[in-house]
Image 1 (cartoon, rainbow, N blue to C red):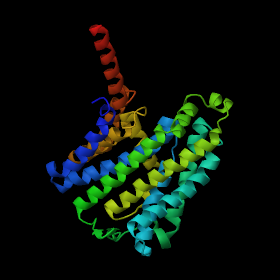
Image 2 (image 1 turned 90 degrees about the vertical axis):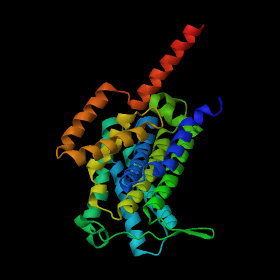
Image 3 (image 1 turned 135 degrees about the vertical axis):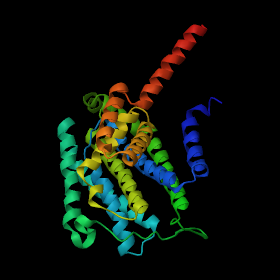
Image 4 (image 1 turned 180 degrees about the vertical axis):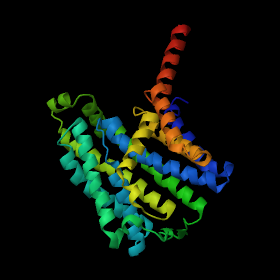
Length: 325
């Protein structure tokens, strides 16, 4: 039982995602679940920088937009299948992240944050100006093809909504597992040491910039993957995917859920999408009300929902053990 306990959040998450379509049969709820999964991956990708490395990036929207357009353009203009297209967008995002990270990691704190924001605007300007490829302000309208995924002897059609849901579950959970392996590896513990005290980490011989650029690349790749899934989900790519305001979404997820726990951004994504969906369908003042609710959530649970819950559970267990002595 003790060996299973560390994995219970993963077991609960996977079990819920597999059974959710059997409980919530409406396409409306399945669409919301797909959106939550994609945004959760977006939030987790940024938390690799903020929560584990101590780097506040305001330019995560660049990779989200790059992944969205790479998925759309390659599927429409080439004969690539979805797996090849996903690998291609990961490569493109890694190249741009290496370029962006090389310059941004020369600076620290707010200077780093604002430089990432400036670099993110390069992608946005390219999308707007390269009309012949990206469609400019109109985006990639007219739909994006979803060719079947060939797996050994089977051809899996992800066009049906339920099939695409399970495809998203596989991609996102697989990405979560990779991210978790990264943060729990020796590489991940070096990132934590940089977060806690960069000067001391450098003093013991750690090449700080090399690690920062590496995690910047990894973070950008997962953000681009989330953007690619969004393009498939809505069958289109649009300039707002790369707008600077999009970079605030994962920050809100991290603030709501917490940055010290791996699942913090996942819970934050669920809360953010749920609130946005409910408020949008009930009032025209949804943005105003959402802002107030987010302020209250961040004020009441400054550590984030998951971090606060984890802290309270730790205090409760210590109190219980003391009383039992």
